[in-house]
Image 1 (cartoon, helix red, strand yellow):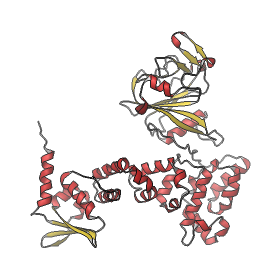
Image 2 (spheres, helix red, strand yellow):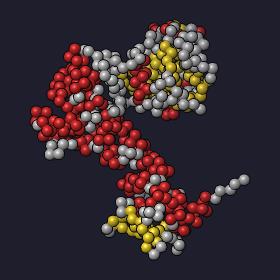
Image 3 (cartoon, helix red, strand yellow):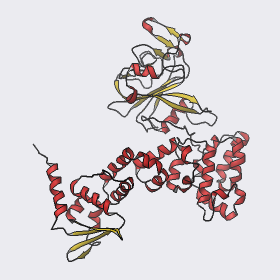
Image 4 (cartoon, helix red, strand yellow):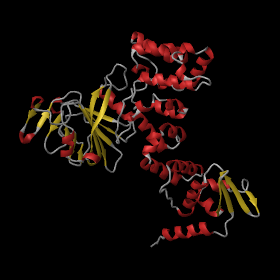
Length: 474
């Protein structure tokens, strides 16, 4: 049996750091009045930090009287003291530390290749400093785009609150990488023509000597400015959903900027807007707006939209939808009563289910909802069982939250049994084709009311479940 005494080890190493008389490294951090020297041991620095393992190699170090001298002017003493404590003891104390210092600590930890600390700090910033991050969103996006968790949080917050940021002067200071990350998302919640207007303003701001406030249309730009604008926006133009823009806006706001749009892109969408000819080039899916699922990623929602439209791929003439979350099991309770209380009414609805001990995702779409629809559209049987006739219903599965290759769909083939409503189930597609009974999910399709593409004998335990009402976009 192995006994572990990390507490004592951490305490002893802390005393070595504080009272060392055998140190062999002096590290000078900070600049000018905010400069300080720290004493350390090369063997510990090398063992704990890949950066120091490389930096303290013989070919890089400077020595004086057998002492290794090292300078890090880009790290403040406050931050480095915390890092050194972490390196020696594995402890980090962020109590009363300002958000700016924590962001500096994140940057320094990343530079010193302290991956464990980088991951912890990202989570801490998101959980404890959300408000400060939101208030300085553009700055954080520009400076911390390389940190995946912080970037994703900032992008999601921006998209949910697009109207608060995209029309501001701060938006015009976005760095290229941050702007690209925003425009490629499907959940940006502003009109596409407004996205275009803001992109043009952003591009003009990048041209030295020009101010977007002084430029009302392209006629105020000379040929050199137009060529510059074309080069600046070249990588962003393919991210604009031109099919989401009305004919009038295309004529009045896109056509004047024809010179900055690649010919093949412009001609395709001009033919679409003038003559209704479908573009042959790849079209990005429509932005679906806010879609707050914790179960699947937005790109899978676009697949579901195609299925609702009974298409295998996006078509510009298809209806566009928005999805409003009305129920989440982890918040509202995973049981029949909770589901029924939140998800009643005759309205098109979607349910998503994440099951335990698997990455698999199940779901179903009902054009008439799940329960409490009333007697006029139902057949009433014994024991309070109601069967509802519905057209267009389907059930489906994904292998995981992000897999758009291995999905399966089963459409309803017996419309009269499309949806059942009974006291012993939260929802029930086709007598067990996809059925929630308290915390269990059944996918057996014994009734053969749906195509037999996803049926299984396994009874899954529901880990998370969400339901959305499906509305046509205005």
